[in-house]
Length: 499
Image (cartoon, rainbow, N blue to C red; front, side):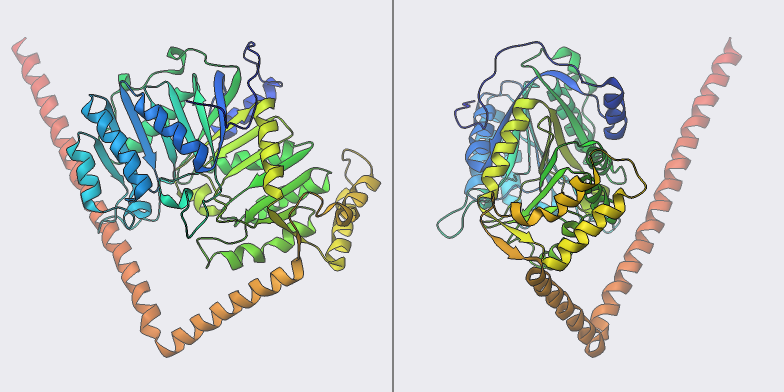
C-alpha cells in the first residue's frame, strides 16, 4: 500500500507505548468493552481517493482470506471494480466472504450482482433481510470493515458506491478511514465473525487469529469498539471522553441528532474551558433530517459549543480528535439509531502522531465550512450559563476564564472557518420547515385518515403475528431439546443396566 497521500509523516521506530494512567485505561476498557492493543501501524486515509486505492491494493495481495463487510455495496462502477478483484481472488483460491446490509444495499445492487459473486466462489450473506417473521428489520449492520489475511484491516465511514468518488454532475463525498496492521486486526476479524454469525452459521474458531498470534507492526495503541443493539458502547465512550477532555474536542458527524445527556456533556466540557467543535453537513442526502439537526444547534451553541456546516458535497465522516492524543474513526453517528439499534464499528487510536494529523485535517476542513454564530442574546446566555455553572463548584481555572471564554467567542469565530451564518436565521428556516411538515401531516390525517391508521394497524398486526410465530418456534425448540434429553437419558439407562 502506498502511503504518499497519508496525513502524517513517517515516525522513528520505538517501543509500543503503554497507557498513561492505568486506572483511566481500566475505566475506558470497561466502558468500551474492549482491550487496548499495542504494537500497531495505523494510517489515516482521507476520502475515497486515498481509501479506495488502499483497499484495492490490499485485496489484490490477498493470499488466504478476505472479509468484506459494508452497509452499502452498489452495482455501479465503484462496486463493479471491487467485485472484479474479489472474483479474481476467489478464483485464485482465496477464501472470500462478503456481508452486506439488506436495507442499505437492496436498492443499490440487483440479484444478478450477488449471483455473479456467488458464481465466482465468493461466500455472500445478507444481513437482517426483510421477513414476515422479523419486524425488527430497522436494526441495521452499518459497519464498514475489510480485513485481509489477518494482516491488514480497514475501518471507515465509506461505503462502496460512486457517491464517494463523485462524477461530472456531483462532487465526491467527504469521508475518513483508517488502515490498520498489527494485533488490533484480530479484533477486527472477531467483529466480522460476530456479524457474520448473525447472518448464518458461525466461523470456526481456528479461522480467526488471536491478537497474541499477530506480530507487532508499529508503535500505535488502538482499540476496536463494536456497537450492537442495546449496548450503547460508543455512546458511553463519547460521554467518558467528553467528561475527561482537558484541551479540545473536535468532532465531525454526518447525521447529528444527539441526546440531551450528550449535549449536556459537551456543554459541560465547553463551559469548563475545553474547545468543543462540531462539523456537520451543510447539505445532506437525508433532507428530511436536516431541519431537526439544525433545530438542535441553539442548545449546543448556548453551552459554548462551536458548530460548523460543511460547504462541499455530503460530509459523511464520523470522527473525533481529543487533546492531541485520542482519536476515533468509524461508522457510528451521533444519534440514537447508531448508539442503540445498529451494528456499528469504530477504532479508537491513542497516539499523538495520528491525533495531530487529524487535527490538521480538521482545520483544513473548517476552511470549507461556515460557522453558525450566536447573536447578542445567545452570547449573554453563554456568559450567564458559564457563571452559573461555576457557582458552587470547584473547577479548573478561574471564573474570569469561563466568562471570558463565552464572551471572547465573538472575537474568535470565523478566524479558521470559511464564513459565518446567523444562528437565528438558521434556526428560523429549520423551525419553519418542521412546522410546515407537521401541518401537512395534520392535514393528511384529517383528509385521508386511513393513510395514517392503516399503516399503524398493519405494523401492529405484523409485530403481533411475528411474536406469536417466534413463541411457537421457541416452544418447538424446547420440545426438540426435551426429546433429545429423554433419548440421551434412556440410552444411559440401558447402558447402565447392561453393566
